[in-house]
Length: 263
Image (cartoon, rainbow, N blue to C red; front, side, top):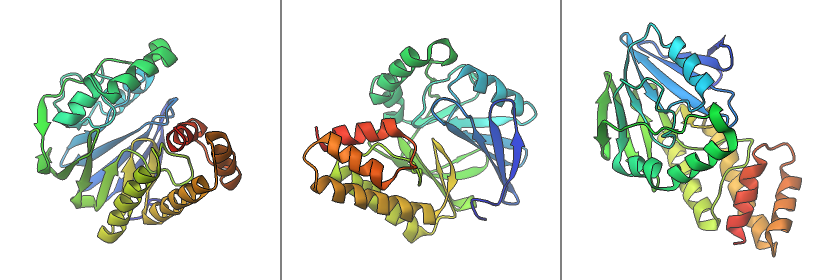
């Protein structure tokens, strides 16, 4: 299975990329919202488990309709805790730190900012976590997951489809990189993905990617560090990165990265 082996179904606003692994099907929902959010639906034996939730009301209505004939056994709520009007009766799974992140930590600050920026189109209500996960294996809806807590929330391995889920990759867009040490941490994580040979890398803000994309991101992060060593301030750093990657999206993320490298 490659990242391009899918069929597409257009919805009213978003679209579904459907990957068929046989017993399991992966529905990758591209929301086309203002944050390029992705929601992943894993379907097995007539029921589904979701990874993350849409957080804009129109996407919530659209995805609810799409799932009308597919019972949902649970939602794994990691980095995107908003949107609690989506399937409110479905069990919600998260680690304790992910729960805290959305209710009182950095995730709450983001939700507050998004509410101010997007107004009534955004659902700021936070999913109530009904099941606390810990590091290790968990089976939800008949699907095995390996839970890996991170500083803010948690990542997932999905062994049955040889995939991993993390918050961000994006091989042709800027990312939030909180300085050289953070860049090194991301590089180490991506090299681990390469060593394990994952077929797909799923993230919260991009369509499914692969190990070639991971190498592109590693090269990007190494370049950021190299550029930073020759700059004295955020403005010159940002300018040089833009010249090196003129077609990259996510300029707001580059602004944040420049601020971190030259605090």
